[in-house]
Image (tube, rainbow, N blue to C red; front, side, top):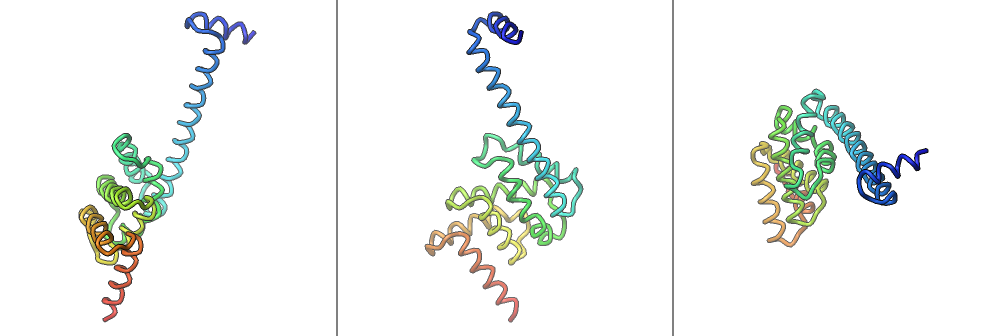
Length: 178
């Protein structure tokens, strides 16, 4: 019976049964992928809430801001949320409070620009940026300038961004001990 239904639907659509089945399969695959992405974002939202010790509502606003960057960055909202979840506690401690969605997006935009310009992955550039911001107590609004400075200094010294960030963090720690 299902063969008859498919043939009837295909005829109504003006295509062959095989073409109709292929299209239906494609729609189902896209739907399954969308559900998978939604589930991953829900998990990442919970991870951000837990790591940042913020409400799920606040974390949802942050991941929603990341989702709003679709087609304007090479990084997916999922990649941004993963990278942010790994540093949210460090950034919030540096700032003395949880970041707003706009501030979190600003930090991640700066980290994304740094990653793209330097050829590092997003997680590494986010970690490096957060570490330097913490070492020098740089506020969230200084993330873009800090990312730019890191890139320029890495280019001028011939070091990778992560190596330079590590060296800066060690230097700051040593200076603090003096």
